[in-house]
Amino acid sequence: MEKLSATVIAYNEGSRIARCLESLLWADEIVVVDAFSQDDTVEVCRRYTDKVLRRDWQGYGRQKNYSCEQASHHWILNLDADETVSAELKEEIQQTLGGEPDHSVYRMPRRNYFAGRWIRRCGWYPDYTMRLFDRRRARFNERMVHESVSVSGPVGTLQGVIEHHTYESLSDYIERLNRYSSLAAEELIREGKSVGSHRLYLDPLGAFLKTYVLRLGFLEGELGLSIALGTAYYTFAKYFKARRPAAQGREKA
Image (cartoon, rainbow, N blue to C red):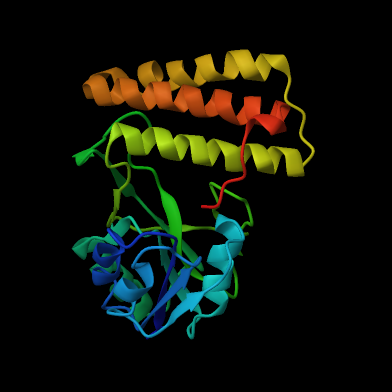
């Protein structure tokens, strides 16, 4: 049977990381990499694992790769601090690693919650994400934000879900959209990508229509409208900040 290391990166997650770690206690090891939180994140994490490491923030992809490098086992299950493993996914992972895994990377659906409500539309479900992998054959790309696992070859699919308790309120949503758009703009600048006026003016409109109309966001009521408007704002903000770097401040995590 393959042994499993669960990895989590954190920064000021003291109020919600306990639920995440509680759902990972069945793993052979839990590794937490904290970016010098200013709250009680480290104290909370040490209730669940002795392997709590501290490292300056390097961006989402680099931080996650570092957490994988500190793991004792080759198979990695990575979660964010606001995510939990469902009972069904736990059993499925144990069965997969109990034999000879058919793939080196597995994806699973993610159930996203906004203000405590599961959002089924807007492109938020099933929202497949690759989080279970053999670190000898896959790793995260080192993007500042919206990182993902890079792998060559086929990817297996699991049916159990990751529960993602994402935005707690509209204020939380707006705050994080602003932070993520700054990180995305920083990456565009670093990669030397130019942003034409058409992207600044047309892409936000396209993002809104895609989320609200094509992905049936209007069926989610006021939360669907909030998500569609937020998607449009994020698209506009990242391009605006990339065109005018002086208009944004540097973000941490």
